[in-house]
Length: 232
Image (cartoon, rainbow, N blue to C red):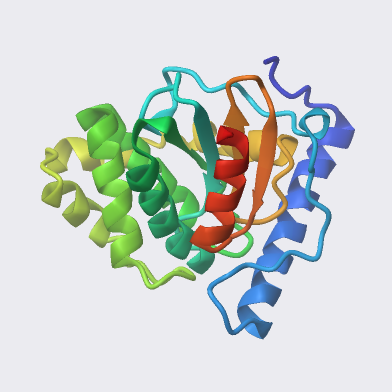
């Protein structure tokens, strides 16, 4: 897929969309009393409306890219609903075995969670130093450690790196270099282009190209219903 052309319109559209997403998530946190993100904005519902980058070998994935279904999730490590949905997705891949794969992509909403972008960069440093499996171990621990909403102390990031077996000095060098800053920014742009207006935002992709949106942190049974309908 071609990169987003940086026209004046796009430069205004992307920050505006992210600000809207932040406001929606903030409202859900303030007014909500549940673990599910309820969305009052219109999500794309057809394949034609979802302009999403294809899954490649560069993606962070549990399972195979050739699985019957691949769920692409755009997530923010400081979003409380993402924290809940992270566990849901682990249950999904465990339940369906090799039939369903899970791809994680970054969508930190910096207007709401100032620490999330750096945490996303930290997961990329973990992947660089330890590979795909260590990426997942690292991000699992980030979600386990944080209480969400910018509560994670940045000093925990190298501690988590040590816990998953990384060279802490190499990790700190990577994180302080900022070499993944632009990559995370591009991931945010791609998320907005794919239709994301809040977090988590996930798209189930079938082998035949059919796409179905998972709106926010849907409960496991709702997610299973969508998966089962596509697997029939």
